[in-house]
Image (cartoon, rainbow, N blue to C red; front, side):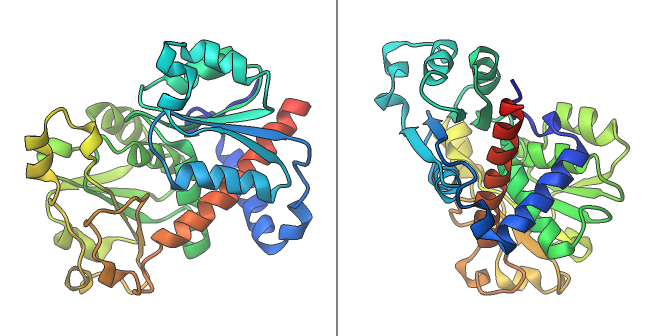
Amino acid sequence: MRSLIDILDFSVEELDEMLKTACDIIENPAKYSEACKGKKLATLFFEPSTRTRLSFEAAMYELGGNVISVASADSSSASKGESVADTAKVISCYADIMAMRHPKEGAALVAANNASIPVINAGDGGHCHPTQTLADLLTIYREKGSLNNITVGFCGDLKFGRTVHSLINALSRYTGIKIVLISPDELKLPSYVLKDTIVKNGIAYEETHDLEAAMPELDILYMTRVQRERFFNEEDYLRLKDSYILTPDKLNNAKAEMCILHPLPRVNEISVAIDKDPRACYFKQVFNGKIMRMALILKLLKEAQA
C-alpha cells in the first residue's frame, strides 16, 4: 500500500506530476468537486495543529469526500496506552486514507507498516513534514516558474525544523540549487542532513550567522520559528527565541523578486509590517498547501484502487 512518509518516497517525476495536478485544480476546481465522493479521510493529530489538520480536511471536502477526525491525543485511545500500530489497524476499518501527526519520530512509518490504507505523514516529531514540503514546492513553482537554478536561504531553527529537513531533501534532486544555512550555532542543521543530503548530492552551500549579509543572493528566504516545544529547558529557548527577527529594513538589500516563505505559525520572527510586501508569500503557502494535499489524496487513492 503506497503511503507518503518522507518526501523522498516520491520521485521528481511524481512531484512534478502532482504540481501539474495542483495547477489544474486551481484552474478548474469544479472538475475535481466530486473526485472523492464516497471516500473518507481520517485525520489523527496527536500534536496541536491548525493549518495542517484543517487544510487536510478542507482538501477532502473540496474533493467531495468526508472526514473523520481525532484532534488530540487526549481524545483518542492513545491516552489509554493503545499503540500506534493498533491505532492504524483500527482506523483502516473506518476510512479510505489517513493523515497522522505524532510527536515521536518514526510514528508515521509504524502506522503505514500496519495500516491497510494509505498513510500520510503530517509531521513526526523533529523528523520531517512532507506535505508542508509539497506546499513549499508549489509556492516556489508558482512564484518562480521552476524549481531549478535558485538560491534558498533557511533561517532560524534548522536543528528541529522538520519542514527545513524535508524541503532540503526535496530540493536536493533539482539542478542549480544553492542552499544558505542561517542560524545560531545551537540550532544548526543536523550533521546527518548536511552530510547525507547536501554534501552527498554535491549541492553548493554555505553556513552563516548573518542574515543581512546573506540576503542579496537569495531567491527564496525560508524563515522558521524557534520551537519552544522542541526544547528540553526553558532557559535555552528564551536565550535563542529572538535570534532572527525579519523587519522591513532588513530587506533593503534583498532582491525585488525574492520570495519570503514560512511554514507558520509565526510568533515574532517576521514583523507584521512585512505582510503587505509583495515578496511575502507565507499566506500563499497556506492556500497552496490545501491544493497540494488535494493532489496528494487523489494520487494515493488512485494508486490504492489500482
